[in-house]
Amino acid sequence: MGMPVTATVRDPGFDPRALDAAFAELRAVDARFSTYRADSEVSRLARGELAPGRASPLVQEVLARCEALRKQTGGAFDAYAGGALDPSGYVKGWALQRAAELIDARELCLDGGGDLVLRGGPWRVGIRHPLEHGRLCSVLELGDGAVATSATYERGEHILDPRTGRPARGVLSVTVTGPELATADAYATAAFAMGAAGPAWTAGLDGYEAMTVLEGGRVLCTRGFTGRSPRAHVVVRAKAA
Amino acid sequence: MRALTALIVTVAVVVLLARFETEPPRTFNPNSALGPVKTPRALAKQIATPPPRRSGEGTRSFLGPAMTTPFSAIQVRAFFTGRKLTGIETVLLSGDGPHTEALNARAEPILRESALEAGDADVDVVSGATSTSEIWLDSLQGAIDKARRRG
Image (cartoon, rainbow over all chains, first blue to last red; front, side, top):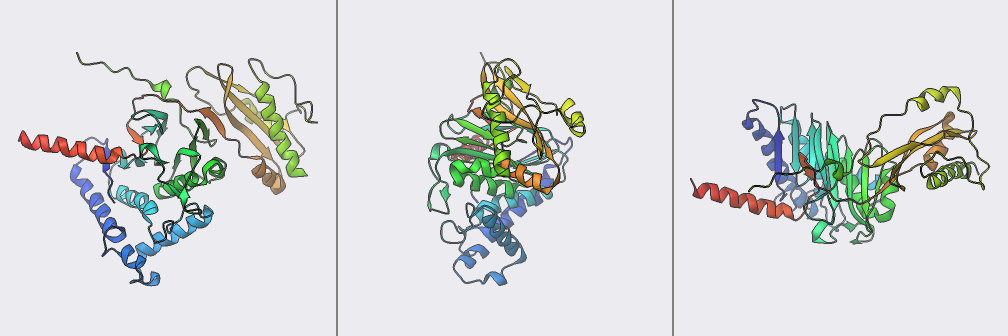
């Protein structure tokens, strides 16, 4: 899926070989779901060579969840956003969640390209600033759960609103926290696509909290979002002579 | 009409907070028929022990009065940085029956608003992917190459 995945384990005496199963699972999911591999199940589905009803149970599970999310978001999350089937927006978080379940550790942070599955903790999570490179706009302390952030960053507009086919406007970044990463990621993507209507939509989510940074610098958080100012956490680093 | 009433409650409280500077408010929206109402007994305990709240540096929080309508009660905590209203938290929102719940669902959400900040903090991990993911990989590859060269 073209993203770096990093596992951080704090358990003393943890054997790194215990990560092998998790990374094997990520590779297996990639082989099945990748849109870049012509022989993947998803590519065969997208070309119409495989009927959805004959897909494997795992693919059917993902497609059913994508469809439920499309309905829940009024089409702002859509695995067919680009025309052809591309469930990557859901599969990435789903795969990380599955991989995390294979890691027998009490203190775990699994980071897939800035989307996180957390266990134990509390973990101090910085939310990347949407405009200032290398800086943070919020800091959270979280235990078990997941964090997903959708943003444009320096690449410019690259999140399309499936309902219009055009780049989503009005929002710089959306961070969603909650129990499960794939859902948090889909919600973040959908809220981003909704633009200025996104924050009010996130306030109605059950079990998930969100922070939306709007163009112009307004930040809107749902009631349970626990992020705090990064200024309250400034660390003075000693400079090497 | 009742939904409108619930919305007016929210608006009245927000208007109240907008006027709220350093002292608890003593005036209410003159256009509203709403005023402070005696706290129902069942809610008193909740009001007396609001959830603990950690606030950021230089931020003060103030609890507004409990406002009630025939259908619901609402109380908010406001966060100020200096004299600027930077956040609103609903610490109490209750009522009786499905009718009230429906009204409340419509009167909510109140989103906390703040200004975008930038800081550098000591964190374990950062959320938010960037094209730096590729740079990150390049950098890692460079480090691996260097380690290999040094054998």
